[in-house]
Amino acid sequence: MAMLLLIPLFLSSIALFTIASATTFSTHPGICYGQLGDNLPPPQKSVSLITSLHAKRVKLYDANPAILHALRDTSLQVSIMVPNDLIVNISRNQSLSDKWVSDNVVPYHPRTLIRYLLVGNEVTSSTAPNGTWPYLVPAMRRIKHSLKSLGIRKVKVGTSSAIDVLEASFPPSNGAFRKDLSAPVMKPMLKFLNRTKSFFFLDVYPFFSWSADPLNINLDYALFQSKNLTVTDPGTGLVYTNLFDQMVDAVYFAMNRLGFPGVRIFIAETGWPNGGDLDQIGANIFNAATYNRNFIKKVTRKPWLGTPARPGSALPSFLFALFNENQKPGPGTERHFGLLHPNGSRVYDVDLSGETPEAGFRPLPVPENNEKFKGEIWCVAARPHNATALAAALAYACSQGNGTCDPIQPKGKCFKPDSVFWHASYAFSAYWAQFRKVGGTCYFNGLATQTAKDPSYGSCKFPSVTL
Image (cartoon, rainbow, N blue to C red; front, side, top):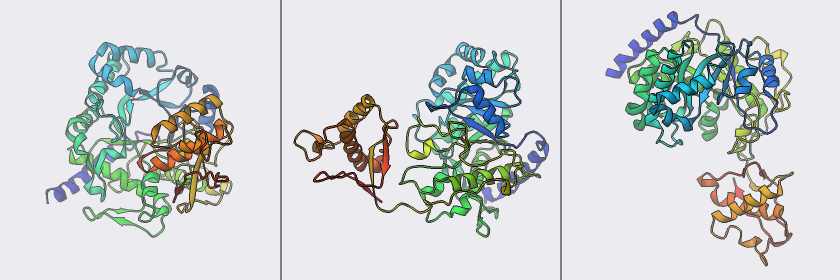
């Protein structure tokens, strides 16, 4: 009953907040500029490409001097980041915090429009080491103090959080932060954000929620394409027409539960992969273009749509990402979130201003993997390859499991042909078949690739994953 009484107060306070802040932001999305690629264009060219997309902001995952220099005298608002591994030391040492700001902000500000400074990236994720958590908010306070002492007052300090900061998210009105974070981390963080009028920077990926449960979550609902499907929150009566709004509102309600209904959300990352591995459903150009174009329409529409829990509110954002980055580890989708190929050509047409009508874009290829792959998949060495690196990856794969590489030992059924390439292909398949269910990937620092073509030959049978 207490929660039901709080909900009308929560919604009315949001309405007042929305009116007060309605003219604060440009709602054109920005772009996340990652650098985990060995074939990316230089900063000056990249900044030109960002401008060609009609972005208003750019988010960096560090404070790269060359990029910050290239951003001078542009109209792009810039977000920079303190690396995760400096958080503990900065939290303990104001002098170190002052030096970081002096080295990474002062030389560029104000000609480079640094407007956001994130202390760490997804530090509170359930997959991140929790030894850093207690130091996060103290480090944010020190960085804010450094900025103020150096006379820099237009930079908002925050940190980016993944959606897994929540332990409950459905229905949205049940949104609650994880118990291990709520009191020790989230409450002091929200107090800091509220006091400094900063944002809760949130990474939101409907793709991952949908792809984990495609039978129960409608694809069109995840892509902002749902015509008739709606979801009603039984606790509030709020009606949802897309998965993104559900996820964001769960965080609004979680913040309200801790007593901070007025903290604003800034979408620090969102997007959809344009490609991936054979075992990754729905990662294709059609879905990526559809999601990103519809997201842009949503956040640039006037009057502002907001979300059901915060109707009419501006939602500043960054789309992930500028480029397909070929050195990102993990499954194939990690290397296929870019709006652009590394050579600067577009993966698909997109306009971050939202002003280009759909008819102005080229047709999209028909999606071919919106249903789960069925059959066998093997993990083999990719061509071309670096022989030294491939030998090291082969040694790693063979060291991980019981008997993983027995068939490629002398006199084994798969020893011949006696080459690093074929031995690595067998080892990669054997490793992946053994460890996929516990998080093993077919990547090996970019040396491996998935195939549906059986590489077995003669009496040598390669292990496979059957889906």
